[in-house]
Length: 192
Image (cartoon, rainbow, N blue to C red; front, side, top):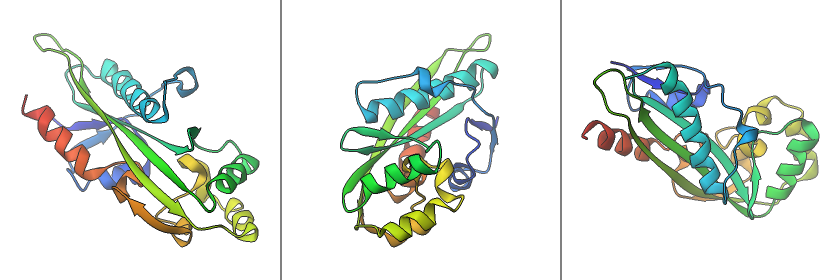
């Protein structure tokens, strides 16, 4: 039985294929704006859980993996930017400082006849250090398509690598799927 990845992110598909090729992609219809939590790390986990459970309800008995990534800049949550002004606001806030990237991970299966519901969830955190970013570089970057489908308005594997002075934690977590932690959680989930 293939796993279901509750994400259409091309980066997550690519990273998931490092763990297994036996998965299919299904989109979640969760209204992220309706969910809240007491901290950015809990928000990432809450959103990942909601996405996994929404897809699991449509696919009973299947194992579903949900993910959500948020950027935490001094307690402020940066999701995907709404527009160029929002992207610039986020990038200016990240310039010259450290921030955390939290990715929630949830594996779940909802019961088909004769099965039990089962769920495991966690959140992985990485710290990213950015050098001060030149205003002209920020403006040029905001005119590209790269920032607009990424939490915090940047792709660490893209142009933002030029600003990154260091990372503490999992690099792949910053891309939206902590590979090692996900593989461990999946192994634990399947061993139950």
